[in-house]
Length: 148
Figure 1 (cartoon, rainbow, N blue to C red):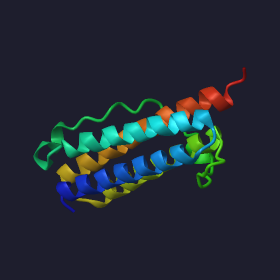
Figure 2: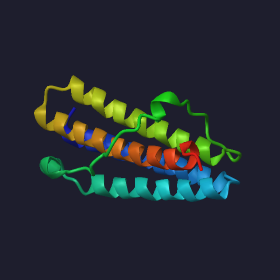
Figure 3: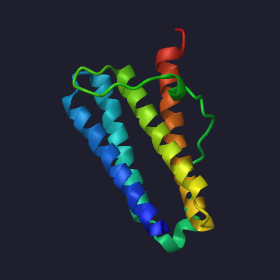
């Protein structure tokens, strides 16, 4: 797989994520979940634009945000399908799991390639997904796991 193909795949994944979050935001009855889903949809659109502006020749210059400390909360949770009745906790769990799966996908692809440039791009995409996951896990920890 060429770097341009990986970029196209990553862009498709960002589009799918944005559409999912936007569609569920429209249907949810939970105001807090709607707000979070709209923010996630906007972020996925921004990630798409970032990736679309990245030419295969400039892949080496792509620097994802620092991921921060992975809290590994998603690894212990199970996501349920999102729907109009989904709670904020279900929405955050679903989003964490989605980011975790995206990260795992890119890491597996990076491990399977011998092309150094492609491996570096895949590792950086995995880091970007990890940063998304960490942000969501921090939110989850603050809202659902902290004792008041």
